[in-house]
Length: 211
Image (cartoon, rainbow, N blue to C red):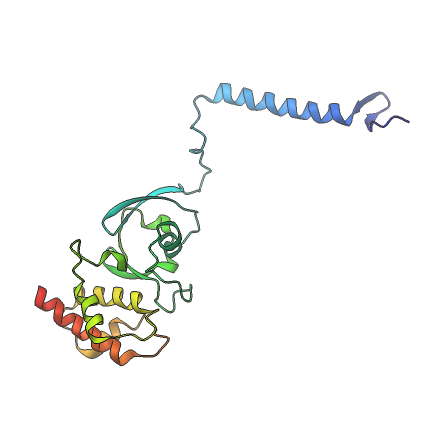
């Protein structure tokens, strides 16, 4: 018996190898015809499926234009930490509860773990790395935290600091209760809220002095 498997009827037989080769040839012919009659095609890498999102995008981060390759479902927190190396943005709960990943998006403190990166193209993104002045001068909020020693383990500090920045820009003269409300979206694992609020009040004071 032949070792070649026969596919078909006795009247018309064909070997498996020839059958597969025929399918490949037919596919190549169809593809070629489609190419000839559909006109110019986009470059490889620019091919887009309907409903897809461009992967190579430009972000405005800390005043710089950063070109980065992102997945459709990628969060801003992931992009900042693992694509752009801005590790001051912490990943805590990763579900918009703890506030450790807080950054400013167009001046609004936002959970970057719950923002898809491709949705903030054209927005101004500020992380804690972008607060310090070019000459090394600390932002009033950073200086206030340093003065008051507002944190213990400090894992939550970057997120709190970014929320404080948003607070003093929106309300440069808050009461302690208003400060507590402004920072209510951030959690401290060490529960050192009293010192954090003291830092926030000091931050507001320094901000008013520099205004």
